[in-house]
Length: 363
Figure 1 (spheres, rainbow, N blue to C red):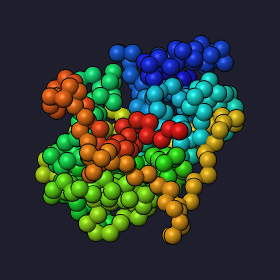
Figure 2: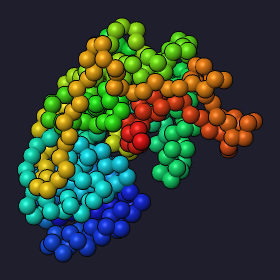
Figure 3: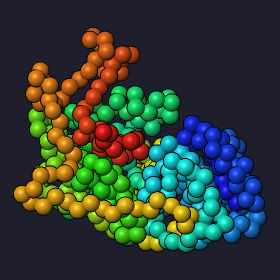
């Protein structure tokens, strides 16, 4: 049985006729609706005796069905029918042609991958606190993701907004960070081409990224940010703006009983304190035998060679610090119609990883 979210990816499942193709293969199809979400349809399929669960949709839909499949120890077939399809991409699937993934329903190659847990809640990609979690709560986010993110990000970049929580890191507890990201297996951060990609979902480790809240907005914030983001698996020196590390568990705590978060692209209220953990091999998957696969992870640049990380920004002559606010019209103000903010490619990259936005450089 396969659960299909026809609304994901601006109707991608409909454009590729995934439901009809799956039925032609002899697979039962269940479409999500306002009355029947993906998780409830998956549980119903198990009650009816389904031995394999399939899901066609975006990362949020996939995460919902993956939690049901993992709890019942049933194999899952993932069909990338969302917008970004980060989990499917990191499984090595062809995210441009979701039809190819349907073959796994009949002759899939078995594998096991890790799952993340935020308390009792399963996540396949990440848990995000900060700008992205706030953006998910904004009306119209689904229809205009880039615009809403651009309206939320500036306050976090300049230190005016922060996460009302504390995070335990290898450098000690960080209070009131600007951004917190906990991922199911660590993200690659060293090279632009694969920024935000996971080259393995079987390390048995979480990835942690925390952006500290500066006491003031330092003129070199973006320089520190892009440098620290290149330190894959290195927590950096004490006091650096960005802390990145890997761990089996990451704890977030606060004086407040709960916090808004984004989990796999869905807004949730997260009870605090919460410990994120990884369940090694917690999800059985069936993969199409004919798939692109996962590319080899590029090695970081050797000391003394040219860096291959995020390229430095080129400040405009009238913007030597590289921090530009673009207002259209010129009299615009944050939160008002016509206001646009571009914090630069480096902070956009971090927010892009959280949100599932396309952060891969072009050209």
